[in-house]
Amino acid sequence: MADVIIRNGTVIAVDPERRIIADGAVAITGDRIVAVGPTEEIVRDHDAREVIDASGMAIMPGLVDSHAHAGHGLIKTIGGGRGDLWYQACQGAYTVGSTPEFWHAEAQLAALERLRFGVTTGVSLLGGGDSIMRTDDPAYGDAHMEGVLHIGTRSVVAVGTTRPPHPLTYARWNGSQRTDCPVTFEQQLATSLDLADRWHRSHEDRLHVAFLTPTVHQQHLDDPGGRDAVAQSRRVKEIAEERGLIFTQDGHTKGSVRIAKDIGILGPRTLLSHATGLTDEEIAICAETGTTVVHNPSAVASILARCPVTELLDAGVTVAIGSDATAPDRSADMFRHMQQCMHYHRTYFHDPSWLPPGKALEMCTIDGARVLGLENEIGSLEPGKKADIILVDLRRPHLYPANMPEFRVTYFANGNDVHTVLVGGRVLLRNREPVHVDQDAVLDAAQRETELMIERLGIRDSLRTPPMFWRNSRDTNLIE
Image (cartoon, rainbow, N blue to C red; front, side):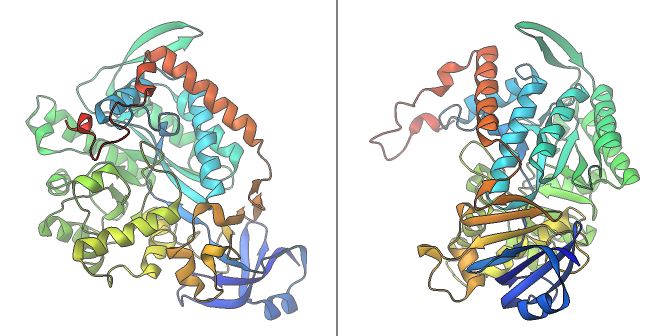
């Protein structure tokens, strides 16, 4: 007796055989897949308490978003495209302008967006901007975790320390009363350890914790705090290794991978984000050390320099795709990012043969699971794996005619085509509507906490439509 059978759909399994089963089914018991095959065989061999009819749909593994930022969901387009104003908003919100309620509301909003787009597992750095982490006190990470937990998706929350020098000024709020607090490296590290102790692999293994430190570039080595930055990166990486945690860094670019190797923080459990402008030497370093990379094709960083994805793949490096969402100009829709990734690199080579759609899909499923050390649990439809499954409605004008579904879902689908989502065998989205979540309450809380944050920081002017938004071929106000 299975708990759930999903039947009559087109299975795109992303399993070792890369099977596509035209009239396929998946049987689920508890939180695990117990069988994948033709509908006739699955129905013959299994009874079920619940049957989900997937006629006209693709049955796929849940998508994996390997890099995004908690907090960004309530910042989004603040600054109107001006990077300086947007980073100021990030830094302010993530140090002196936010409360636990802010982090809870943002976590729910971002997780709900992911859920509706079929992203069943996502990485969220607890902050961003200039590598600012909200790790002055565990209350903020706790609030984020509780928010994600309520939505029901799977999350890897990256916590860690900010760039030296320390201490860094944070603020806590009691109503309108602000209290500033100097925060040291040791305090941030203690907060991160506390969060890992209480949340890592908790709640049916849906919540994971990763550790991070800011990426070290040559200019940081030349700063007075350069020695501290190196020592702190080594210490956090050592703790991550001892605890079996993923160690990640944001914003790698030319030269920083070589520095990371010299520091001694690379390896199979190290995940480097962006990795733009890498030299041939640095590509080889990633391959030799087993270091993995997350490519964010829709990010501003990918406009400024290219991540050599195809060269990394050919060298044997595992590369996943991240959204870098949800700000300043991108969503959590991983279908969009797959399409962006393919066109980005084909445009670079002036050659449409690069990055076949199957590879792009792998980068958001099994390869995304692999860079997080979860390839034995998620990322494909196989017996024994977690039942993280999405149904994509193929009976849509932009996805017809009904042939070559493996091409349709990567080239033409978007997040709004996701019809049903299961995480750990539990139905969280049905007929495009969340089952266990009051969506209006989530949206209202997000609006309320955003308004409070804007008032605390006094940045309402950053919401104005910029003067060159209309009637111009270029907004020269964005040139720094």
